Length: 192
Image (cartoon, rainbow, N blue to C red; front, side):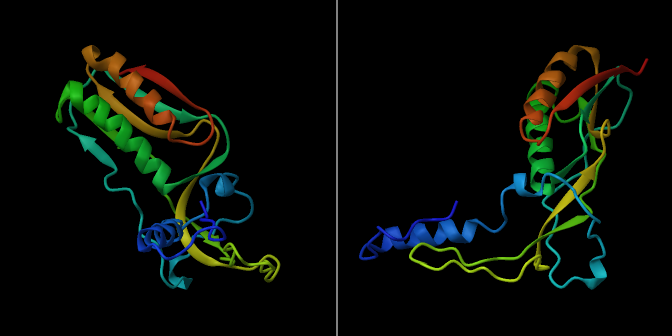
């Protein structure tokens, strides 16, 4: 969200600090702007100055072992998912299952990796600017974020659980679905 400066008096320093924080926190455009992965993916890291770090902390969680069911999270459309959305989904699902099953009662795995670099040609659009900057058409921009291009029916995340934790795992993955763009579905596969 871009802060509106026009009606704010900067006599109060707390208002000034709040307004500056709003601009600072808005590092990347909304994920909806990058949802459709059109064109060639931009993945060559050796040509890029200042590649952004991936926000995904871990790709595996829990403890590998013998489990009864594999619950998978699939995506139903060709889409591009930012690394922040992937990490939010992983955290939401893992925390919910971990509360019931404990740290060793499940095994989760992310099956996608954010290779694609997202670029943004930053424009000046602060309040009080009577004339907006037009800039160059189709400008290249700087790398600001990472994303994964996902095909229809591709597995995003899977969790292996025992029979007694199957229902809570389904609910946890449904909770994680809300963090992702598009319409994900949940599929249960018996392992034994």
